[in-house]
Length: 102
Image (cartoon, rainbow, N blue to C red):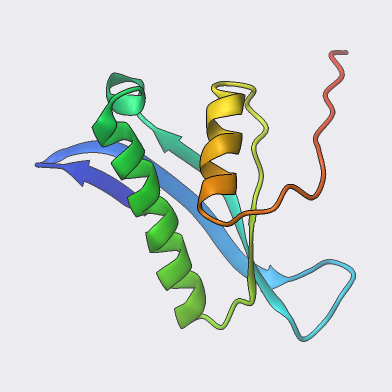
């Protein structure tokens, strides 16, 4: 899904729907990557773009019968801001990610 402001792309989200790897008969949407472009990210329109992408994912998920949406934040960029937004729109924190440089 691509977000546009006028004709310019300003954000995108990549997601998929499938069964959880240890379950069956329940479809979940996984947001693999969501990005609001740096040029608008910290502005009021950046927040509106992010909300629009989340709404688009919700509509897309419902049309496919998904019961939950998993949103993974793994970039460590604007982590507090992403957490605050996710909580505000109804997401619950259920885990974490760990990284080790090799």
